[in-house]
Length: 287
Image 1: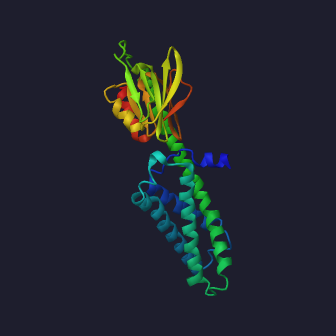
Image 2: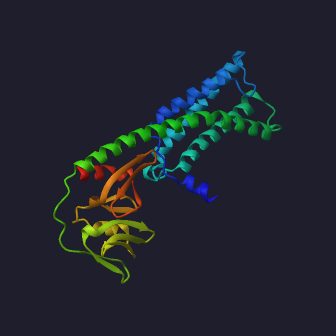
Image 3: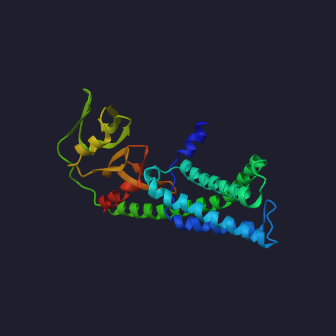
């Protein structure tokens, strides 16, 4: 169960071309019905052709609602920085459920007039048909989105790594020390160049830094936003994710994948995620 939860919560690329998804879903489903004619669906008379046109209309309407209208209405849910595999699957499942309800309604009021005697059997059959047919374009679209995002992120990571190799590293370290303290008596005093990264953990921030040539960390009761404000005058720090602030002088490699970007830092074995919101800031500071 934990593995399934972990998989569903993994970051995933969001569908940034909704109209293309509408077209692909409609065309693929239309071709499946025409070529394979599943579930006793036969294009042997004008009535069946009319039903095919109904199905096609349902695909267009339902995918437009879920892929185009919903992201405009539920912007918080469709935030690219919090998009996951689970949300992707939920989106396609909702399309399939809507399609099943539409087909069932068509069967009730247009094709089969024996409502409500066969209500349950017709409903289950239509939902199964929608799931079977709809899963094919869903898988194809998910593959296209993943592959396109992977190619884009690999290219972006290559460009960022090139900027890293061309970057002029400063010879002069920042003077003075930083004092970070939370709402409790806990605090740390550290040189800016010794901080590796900071991670938000609930109402706390975990500061990873070097002390006496050893990597250590300190948990402070403070928000990541408060830390960001406290470090504004130190240009070596940048927020790269809603939960992370990094020392840009510690970056030595950028990894790109279909899920996004990860930073490798000196003095740390952890890989730090970069969200889309902060990617431009990272690119600018590396330049």
